[in-house]
Image 1 (cartoon, rainbow, N blue to C red):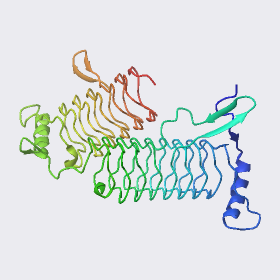
Image 2 (cartoon, helix red, strand yellow; image 1 turned 120 degrees about the vertical axis):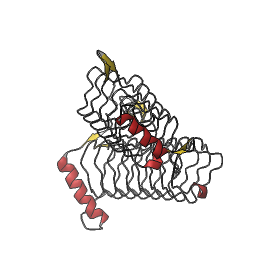
Image 3 (spheres, rainbow, N blue to C red; image 1 turned 60 degrees about the vertical axis):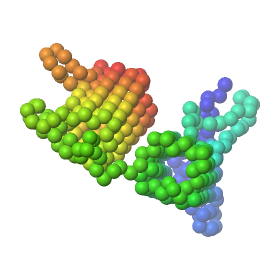
Image 4 (cartoon, helix red, strand yellow; image 1 turned 90 degrees about the horizontal axis):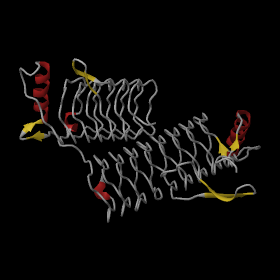
Length: 397
């Protein structure tokens, strides 16, 4: 039995250099030019930054983890290509054939996908050893799932079947045909949706702040739990949130002699814009919204942040020792150098940070101290753990 990747064609640097040079002449209409034939080429993790691959044939190619930032892939044939975790920032993919391609976790910030075809599709081949079989990236789960496409131009794009938790901030989706697409949790902040067909699409929990959703076709769409633009001032029992936070901070600074301890379950903190370096130890705020906020260096030791929306938050250097983050949504959160270890609460007593059932997909925990932290049933797929201290932590990787 052949291995799952036996259909791929290994590449050498010298061959690829020659193929790209000949292809450049082909695109420019010069003598000696030849279209690049990279069908089923194994280019995983290759550095192809700025490469001219317009109209190239990359059918079934493996480009997972490849650096394609600024590359020109206009009108390229990427049918069934594996582009998982590829760096496609600023890449030109206008009118590219991306049917059946997997873009799971790819970074498409500023990419141009206008007129690209993202419909489903599959490649099949027949060999003497294996007979007829369908080729697909291992554990393929949706072609735009968790992808980043901030500022991307997806004008008139064909149906993107799965865009769950994709980052589409500022994306141009004018006239996009996204009927029945799955966009649960997708970030569509500031997206241009004029004339987009989102009929029957699932947008549960999507972020639509600043997006012109009213200009899109939404017949039969699931718009439950949409995260819209925050109120200018958020009130709790007729008191402005910023005053409540100031009272809680005074309570912490004075060890309870001044101020008042806050209770902020379900509060939307986005009106504050940032809580950088604020002292909010023990803050009870289950189910609160912190989406996209700057929380660098914030002190939240022992805080109750269970089920909070912490997607895309900047928590670099934050002190979260002993915090309860059970079920919290931390997709793409920046937790570099965060303190997630145990909190001493008395002689011989430690309160461990609880991240059980938390969603940490594509979060960055580089250099974080998460010793003895609890990660049971947490989703750490795609998370960066380089240099993280996980000694004694409860997790299954």
